[in-house]
Image 1 (cartoon, rainbow, N blue to C red):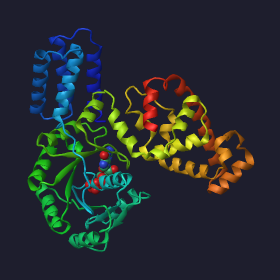
Image 2 (cartoon, protein in one colour):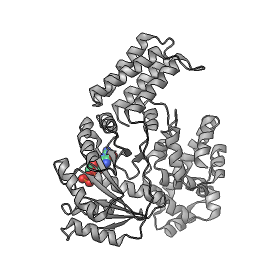
Image 3 (cartoon, rainbow, N blue to C red):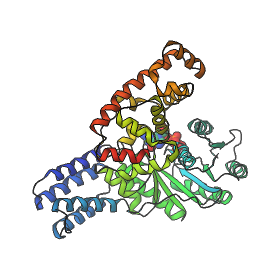
Image 4 (cartoon, rainbow, N blue to C red):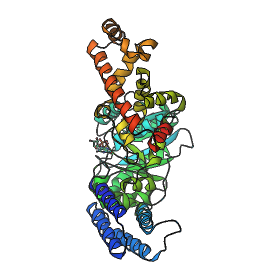
Length: 442
Ligand code: GDP
């Protein structure tokens, strides 16, 4: 995430961790590296300067607490100060009324429509019913975009491309979705300037009476985000912010620190174009990941979303012992469907090894297809995949409405994964890694 910033910061931390002696010179060198990385990420120069000063003062004057080496002490100071740069606190989205009404704002192209789709999915996964009202009268395609993006997510969308009256649309949508837990209002955002954006908010607010207004800011604009956030902050006390496009953005660090500096709550960040690429923003977790310190909490949170009974503990035991059946693979697929690609989940583990390449290349579509195929198998076939030969393949393909080749492809994938899992089990799953996997599959 954040492309180069993450890379250079984790490199700096690794370098520091590898030093035998930590003296003044090393501290200054580390600070220089951090400065360079932050400035490249468009973090405001004053903020960078203050951060450097704090790190230097603390590193050179504070005594390390008992049991902490000077090196560990400096690492923790850098971590602390970086977390402060991002505002320290995390701000949760709390749905405490029904229907909870959220008004979305954002300049055109900021990622608003995409983010609404992601948030709707996030809320659905938490068990809330969601309706989205599209009041964008400028861009009829927005409605289509929303529908496509939320397809299969059990999210209701309301809009009417013939209706040119945004306020009327809002009113109708509000009436239609009274029974939902959450209603999200998409707005046009067809403005050049913040003040027009805020006027749109005022007009729609009078009808919608939102519990929360969310401003979507494009993270690639860097520290310019400050102006947008500042204007928004002034206009509403029920405002929160989502910063998008932080995947690989060269200026994302600048955007986040600028918004944090003025004290506007960043609730989520967008980290990609896929529907699952939305993360709850937590400065501590974010920084530990940016510094390459691993991120267990991020992982555990995703895990919580996967309900317990759906994931059998035996399945993990089977994987670890190398006794990996198609039934176990089905459990894995169901999990991947909920948490995103395994590769992404695994990347949150400190020092995690990579899964077989095939596993990361699996698209959601393929996973869905494979699940349907496995639904057409008998218990015996799931338990003993080796018995699946010609006539069974034909029957399964017919039953699932797929081709013989699809079934064969699935069986091939199964064999490759089984082999890889066996290796993974022996080499990596014994120690802490095994415990973690166990935790996250429970
Ligand atoms: P809107 O005009 O504000 O509704 O913006 P859209 O939702 O249509 O998004 C504009 C573009 O940004 C689209 O191409 C999205 O795929 C892309 N986008 C949105 N969020 C993200 C993100 O978090 N990461 C990346 N890489 N692209 C994003």
